Image 1 (cartoon, rainbow, N blue to C red):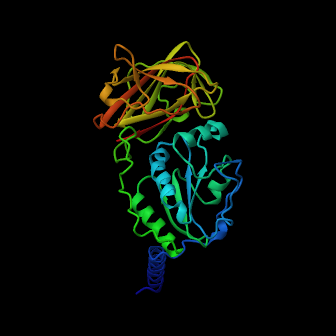
Image 2 (image 1 turned 90 degrees about the vertical axis):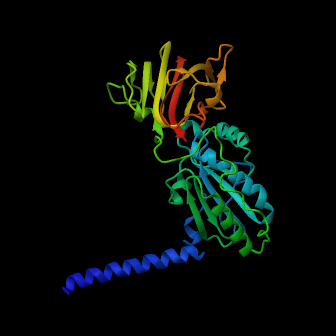
Image 3 (image 1 turned 135 degrees about the vertical axis):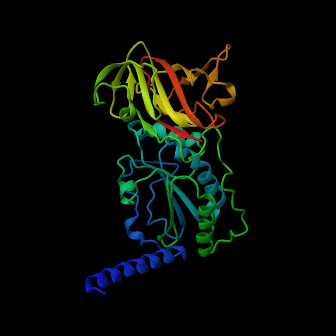
Length: 354
């Protein structure tokens, strides 16, 4: 064999062996990394707690959950995290939610406090408005759960939704290692808190869309401060946002500035949940349509209402947030959601489920 080929082959085998050893170590429960790189940094405020440090939490099993309150993926995971906190906090288990905002309005302390109350969160929540803890943990995702043993070692992490049974098993394992008797506590089923109003993530559905990026019928770049008149001709392709009327581009949203206007979301999936509201705190009533007609009551999300003629609409008030307009009873496929509104309504993004 050619010496160069022999050397390359040896290196490839060595890489494979080392990777396998690392993988087996993680399966066996060995620390994924040491504790020195994980700490709460740059936190602007704490909710439900005085300021905490990872160092001060040594001796406890700690779950750190990175989330943001308008993220549908985070919202779908929160009932499980709330339940784990209630079940295991008396056994030396501490949950810390690190709220790392995706949009500017999510930096507002009062907005986050409202969300914490709405979702029934009683564990400490840190406002990581500058993403210093987010980046310090080497994180890039919402939601992302990190589980630490009593010595401060990262022993398990999970990105995104799902994995609830496995995560709870890991919580019990680390608590048992720390001397707690929790093995007889039933593990919750994987889909116990599945919410048909929000659906779930499945193959073939549309990815999240952002208003400043995914408007299709534009004649120029969506630069902050730009005002333009949009014309929706009704010719829509899947996975796009279509505006009608006068709109202004904000830093992370599109704001309707005309008298009458609308947005259409063309997507693939079942549920559709836009992040909408008013930067100025204005209240709105927006008529909502599914595939050109009023939304059937059987398909209505929890934020949808109906007048005496069964016309569907949504009342928008308070801080901007995610509004669930269509539930998962809709057949999977290509759909269009349209909202008609007066001046002052803004849209940030829209997420989907099935």
